[in-house]
Image 1 (cartoon, one colour):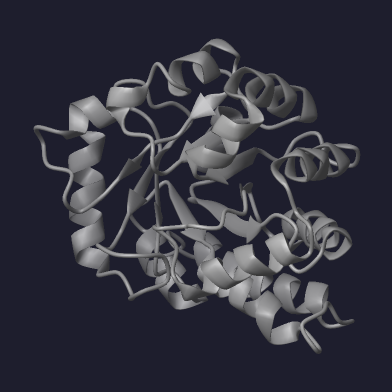
Image 2 (spheres, helix red, strand yellow):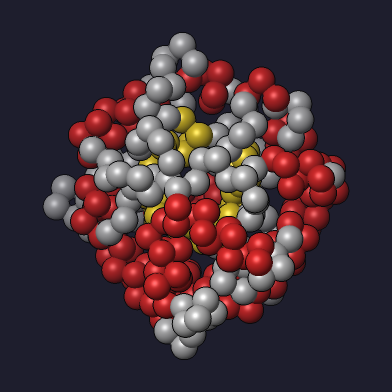
Length: 277
């Protein structure tokens, strides 16, 4: 499975001499209608790949900003079925931007893995990041997803050593998501030199693109990380922009423009990452 929207998009941006800009938003945050409007605005603002969070009540890898986004979505009635419908609605107007669903296995298990994979594929999902399913559980979802034509994207972290890395990469496809810091999302700013060394080490084990996330919050950090990474992932900063735009906890006229403005600014940093090379 080498030819997917994800592989094509990474090849496209590589041919342009730049990294991909991967944006994360939470499905249904702050409400279903505003969530779809935000999704539609992302590609126009410069997003190359979109990760959509699947809200879950116990998001152990998420920092406060993403946790709050998930809770807002759940309180607004978001479900996994509605998240799949959200992708379907987005696909009605965009057939090229890669979509990755990111989250935890519990909602998928409750939904039914076979049904989930079939519905996700039909709706237009391209890949999955399931943060609490290790390689030892690949039979559970990873291998069926690959067989169904979905990329299965694995996380590598600063604690993933050379002994563990081949196991992590064995059934990974689409791209490798390198978590630049130890801890939860949005917790700290990554060290660009350490990230560069880690990306180089991962690339000695795989030909897949390596995207770097966790802690990338602004254009300058995106530019620094993008010098060596194949992709730059921004999530917490975007969901914080959503939160800051709300009035009495609800979407306002500023919500979509605020997100679009932030994404446009960081996109400029991503695109400038290798401009001086």
